[in-house]
Amino acid sequence: MVLPDLPGAAPWTDKPVIDNPDRFQIAIMTDHTGGHRPGIWMDAVSKINLLRPSFVMSVGDLVEGFTDDRAAALRQWREFEGFVDRLDMRFFFVAGNHDLSNDLLDGLWREKFGPTWYAFDYKRVRFLCLCSEDPLLRIGDEQLAFIKDDLAAHADARHTLVFLHRPLWTTAERDLAEGRADSTNWKQVEALLADRPHTVFSGHIHHYVQYRRNGGRHYYALATTGGGSQLRGQAYGEFDHVTWLTMEADGPQVVNLTLDGILPPDVVTEEESRRFRDFLARTVVEVAPIFLEDAAGFVESDLHVRLTNGFEEPVSLEGDFDGLPLRGLSVDPERVRLAADATDSATQSVRLRFGEAIPFSRLAGATFRAQLRTPGPDGLYAERLIPVVIDERHVCPRRVTRPALGAPDWLRGARGTDGAALVLEDAASWTGPQDGSFEFTTSHDEQRFVIDAHVTDETIEEDDAVEFFFDLRLDAARRVDPRMGRGTMRVKASAPDREGTSTAEAFVNRRPLGDCSASGQRVAGGYDLRIELPLRPFGRAATSPAPDFLMAAALHDIDEPRGSEAVVLWRGSPAIRDRTTGYATFVWGD
Image 1: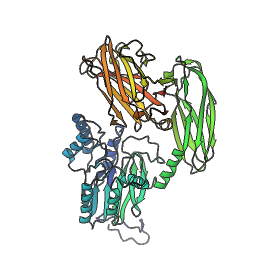
Image 2: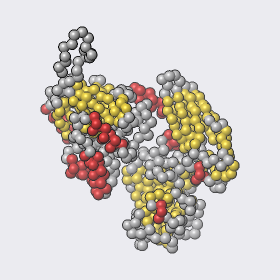
Image 3: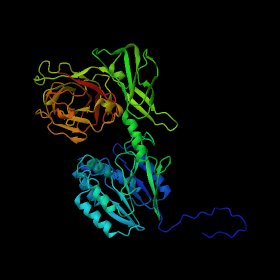
Image 4: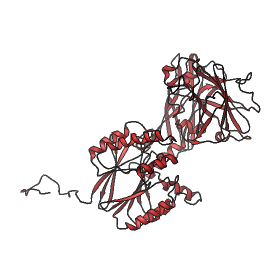
């Protein structure tokens, strides 16, 4: 910079110009999948192109994965590579658990991108791109040897930047705290990094946390760039962002660029994250369910709202009900207000009354929205959206013997769809219950959970099927988070072929469940099915009580070969695969 020699004052400050040939800037994009939201990644791509980093890094979960269909997997990668092709600068792939979720996808990665771990240099900075799925949640021995040799060969690097998908240090620390050996090998990686300047970036958990580890070095778990998130804001660490790294002589400077702003690297520190999550975990809001024997519907009753405060500070609650039909509705009081000191609780009863009986299906979308606060100008704040359960009492009875398919009374007490059913996908092809409807019962014995179903279907095609969705979590957990994930199960049984053969597949926590079966028969105007599952996913032992569970069901109906399907729902919502909104509550009978 050549400045003019001016007499007297000069129109600039005496601060140095930040300019160094070793200085560079890169962008880091984080999770794109795990329930991706279309458009976010491409929005980030367009803004990165405006910012002009030297290149772009990633931390994995680039495609949804979890498919055994090679053609489907290739379609996912074609879509993603199309996104990456829109970047003006180089992009470095790092593998996540979605990207390597089975042997097919692992092989496809190696076919398209080569190794799942590698390293490179840029301006005397070593970039170490690792694989946290070697196998699941682990740095394997071969990769560990690679890290050791690579770091030794580049001991003169001015800084080492590490990129991997899962924040393995949290798993390693949990192992050690519980008296087990480190199952991840991460502590060995840390030992190899300990005597050199380094920074670590990960993703996977879909919320942002800045950590200090290994001699005060910064480790980061990044949030999302379009991956699944409730986007509840900075306190939750939930936002869509790109991390921007400027490498200076004394190490990296990090900021987070949300798509509508810029956040500093300590936007959520580990200590702040721990305090806020403790606040979330120790404040419980419950709306006691109402179960009725009268199938005609609901007219009037009390709803009981309870705040239990296990947090170290007082907590106040304000909330109201939403999603209730307005036919003669009265709510007294209209707004709930509660306050509970530390380790205390408070309850308020709300009288709910309608002018006429309301069908339970019309009440499935009712919610209670609670706003929680701690006192003071810097108090914590959170919102809870809690489903309000007002429903017919669904019982899963114990049956030692069961009638044969189609026998008299074999579907005694069945529940099912009707002409007002919600229909998804090709809804226009569905002409009514005679075209596709179903009824079913549930039961259990000492070892098995059984679903008996009769399907009305004018035309049975190869891909016709019935699917059942279960939320098996404890009531408190599922009311806080209605998303389908850990603690949930999906079961799908095909329509029987002409020889009466039916197949069933079940997934718990998205992993295949063995020991499930289906049998069936075609009958006039449709088909019958019996699906048998092991009882263990329900957390129920033969001699002990168990929690209730949520359930919904769907009929997949195709009317012509290779035609589009109509999906006819019993309970649930258009998001039946992703959220438990509208699911029915089942209790165990003996």
